[in-house]
Every structure is written in C-alpha cells, then in structure tokens.
Image 1 (cartoon, each protein chain N blue to C red):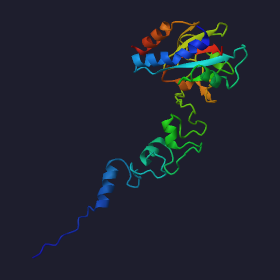
Image 2 (cartoon, chains in turn cyan, blue):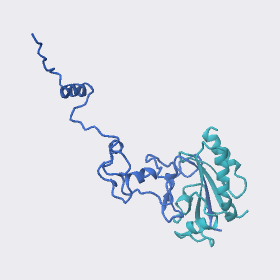
Image 3 (cartoon, chains in turn blue, green):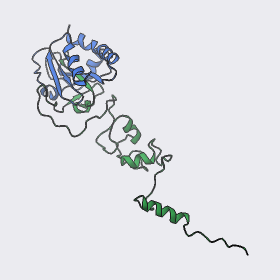
Image 4 (cartoon, helix red, strand yellow):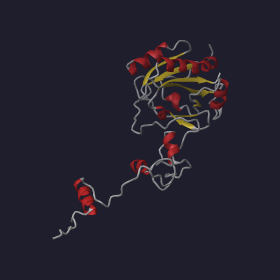
Amino acid sequence: MGCRTEAGSLQAREDDFAADHPDIPFSYVISLYADATGAPPHESLGEEYWEDVGEPEFPVGADTDREVLDATPFNGEVAAGKCVLADDLEILDCRTGHGSEQWAWDAILEHAGD
Amino acid sequence: MTRRWTKNPWRPAVLVAALALAAGCTPEEPVCDPSSDLDGDGVDDCAEEELGTNPEAADTDEDGFADAEELDCVSDPLDADEVCYACGWGHNDPGDLESDGAEIGDVIADGEIVDQCGEDLSVWDLHGEYHILFMTASW
C-alpha cells in the first residue's frame, strides 16, 4: 500500500474508531514533510494533497519548515512515519511503514483507560 | 381615637443596602442582567462580565470576529492575534505546556503546518484529543 492510497483510507479508519469508541476524541493529522520529488513542501501542498486523498475532515498540512518532523523521533528517511499523540500531547509511540495500526489503537486505548 | 400609621424607618432602599452589606458587597455594585445583550453579539451581558469581554462591543479584541463567533470556534475573544481557523479547528493550546523532547514519552514540541485552508495550524492546538500523526512525502 502506498502513502497516498493509505492516506485516502484514513477518514474511514477514523470513522470506524469513532463508532467503536465515541467517548475518545480522535483524529488523524497528515503532515507532509516533502513533495513527491523529495524537496521541501510548498505552502499549498497540504491543500493539493487533501484534495487528492478525498478531502478528509482532519488536518492535512505542509510541514514547510519540518517543525513537526523534528519534534518526533521520525527522521523522514523511510516512506512514512506515524506517531500517536495523547490528549495531553505526549508522544505515546511511533512506528514507520504502512499496514496495521493496531499498535496505535492499543496505545490510545491504554492511555485513555479503556 | 384613631391610630396613626407611622412610617416604617426600614424603607426598601435601606433594607436593600443592609442586605447587600450583609452579603459582602456594596449596593453601588452594578448587577448584570442575563436577559440583556447590549452589543447584540449573542453573548449576554452577564457572560461578558464573566469572560472579561466588553458588553458594549460585539468584537472586543477588534480582530474581525465577533465575541460569540470566537467562543463558538474555540478562539480567545480577548486576543486579537488569535482568530477562528478557516478549517474550523479549535484553539485548544492550554498555554502552559512545556515540551521535554522529541522521543516517545515526551510532550511534543509545538510546530506549525500549513493546513488545507492555507493557514498555519499549531500542533499544540491539537491538545485535548488523541491523534495519529501521519508523516509522509506527498507520493
């Protein structure tokens, strides 16, 4: 699964989580640290990517100064990184690559005491 | 013999003053009227008093957003530098956060991304909700 394909599936995953856990406020955030050529993202890349992945309801943005990337353990050297943020903005866990996010859901549920 | 009715020295105004003093406030203290909204901004005068906003100005901080609009969109009606996000995100930064690093277990440092509405979204405004931060290049 490619990054764009996976990004296009996130709204459905978010909706599923909300249906199963209505008391836990949750949303994805897509942060783009580079464009398709690997160059730093321009300011309108968030909007363009948001349209390309089905206009999800959650934030999709260009990390133009790599502030978000630098604020996590992820270094951007592999295709995609995911970090789970708690409601108090603690970094609960981070992984790279695509595929199952069970580890992320588990981290959220454990922190939320569910 | 007719009995003459003597006027009660505890006239209403005196009684009100006495009660007010007993309650710990002065009778001159204005009392807000929750049914009044002098500036017509949708926030009643009592709520404005509590919030510290001006009950006679619809847009207290003069940032282009009425006080009620800012309350609805989770923005500070007293801070002209903070306005409603066009995409509708709330300004949830609690203001007293401190980042302690960029590793698992740390509070993430604040940073900004340019969102799909073309505005800078502060990561700390994501406070109060859980998130999966999906970081990728645009391929």
